[in-house]
Length: 115
Length: 116
Image (cartoon, rainbow over all chains, first blue to last red; front, top):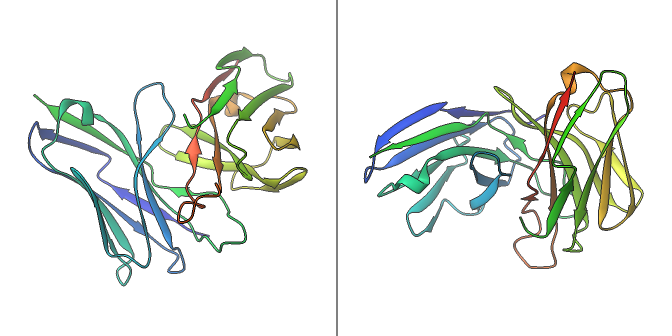
């Protein structure tokens, strides 16, 4: 089955700086890679996703890059703000169109934005 | 939370008692999932459903059963709760009718379960 490794487990950056979180996956057939943000006491919220036919996707201050050859993908947050402080999870799945198994998640990164 | 509610939101129970958690969606999504979240493990899939009365096991299904008698409801049952099942349980849904978003999973607010 799929295995997803996520690094670092904790990341502290100064407000206004950039943050990068990296994930690797084991199953080369995986084709969908979402990122979730989880605030304390809440459920994970999808913030961006990427499919295997795309190398990069951007949404305002958030971007995700995918390297299929190396089997890794990364989340980039620019101009970080206090509200970016949260736990971030990467995930991977092989979506075949006819059905879907559950997502395989990384263990999470606690992002701390220092004022 | 994408039209997903979970009940109860918090529960304390004793070892050996049965517990049922409910997930209700108003999005008419085909797929529903139960995950558990534990420190150091991220989120792990327990069971999922791909339609009414159609369910399958996930990574950590031992000690859990599920049922889906209506599109909108997915129940998770702990037949005889153990302390190792103390966790936060999340329901998720997927496969909307929108193109290029069928695989996107949306999560509910979670149920915090403590087994004493």
